[in-house]
Image 1 (cartoon, rainbow, N blue to C red):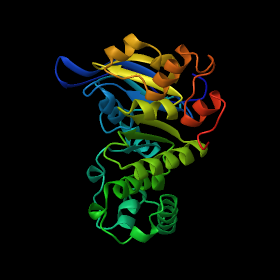
Image 2 (image 1 turned 180 degrees about the vertical axis):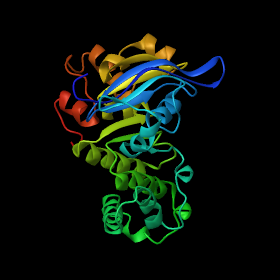
Image 3 (image 1 turned 60 degrees about the horizontal axis):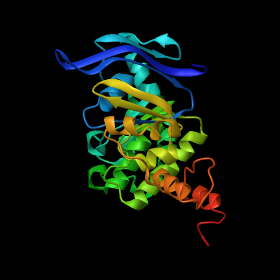
Length: 278
């Protein structure tokens, strides 16, 4: 792949002998991509992410970062370059205050004190957390904890960020905030991979869908290419995105003409000759 930043080749990982959570997975990730990783529970998504950032180590196969194979001595650098935002933010937090939590990663890099301070301030500003800086992170709301966990990764200046079910348990306001942050990170050139069951979110956000099933990659392609395969969706226990289903119904009924598939409600409204505000 042109401009590849991260790849795995024939990676296998087993929690129990003879039952691979990942079964000879090969995948190439380009710099600046937005990838939704999908599949049912137990399909291998989280294990894949944990191998990608060095928390777990492949029992077979190789991981490459910027074309260089990652060995045991390179794992620390891989974790710095590839950040992981856990589904449960409490699993990521260890410090007594928000600012101490955000400072923990940069301090472990043994950066100069002034640079650590600068990174913490930047992350607090980025995630609008200045007013929470002295608060214990474990007493924040779910959405606020998610912001802190993302700030942890921003302070590390990770080039690739993995999000494990980031919209789970978020209220609509917090989910909207998350999508805004993802848009900002994408504009800054970050490579983003999100594990999610939310087909509607994946449909409007991602450029590429990777579907896991029983430790293997079942599909890897463009958003429309994947979501238009009904048999594939059934095999992976996924539903067709609501917007895509509505568009196809309107098209069959002659309400709108065939054209490019809308990714947002605004695009659907434009296809119908109007706007959402009318």
